Image (tube, rainbow, N blue to C red; front, top):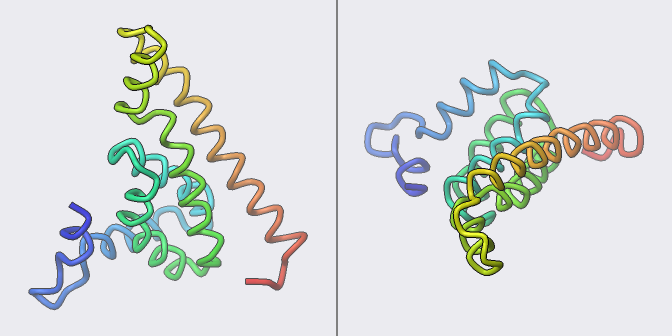
Amino acid sequence: MTYILMNSGAATGTDSMLIVMAKTAASAAGKGWYFVAPLVGILGSFVSGSATVSDIMFGALQFSAAQEVGLPVIAILSLQTIGAAAGNMICVHNVVSVLTTVGLVGKEGKIIKNNIKICISYGIISALCAIILLKTVFPNMF
């Protein structure tokens, strides 16, 4: 799936699906992409079950979106990785594995529902921290 997303436009000489999604999403979110970046990472981990695969799958999207909006690429890619790491707490197969280990089979929906609130809050707080750090502590670094 990642290969198709990244290389879909090569045969026709057009932008890949990721680049098209990045341009569209970046134009919609604008400077608010700081808050979207960790949520994309969370989504990637939820779907794939892996922070690494989430970063591979959506790294190009984040890179292109950051460039499109004019945000620091390193900060946006860092927020992608933070979101991807957090997204593992709501990944279905991770939750099933944990609940099977502790003997609570059948509680997957409840755990995911509780964890998704924490996960999204973590992503939003991460974005706020990034904005504060970039504006106050490291204003000229990126």
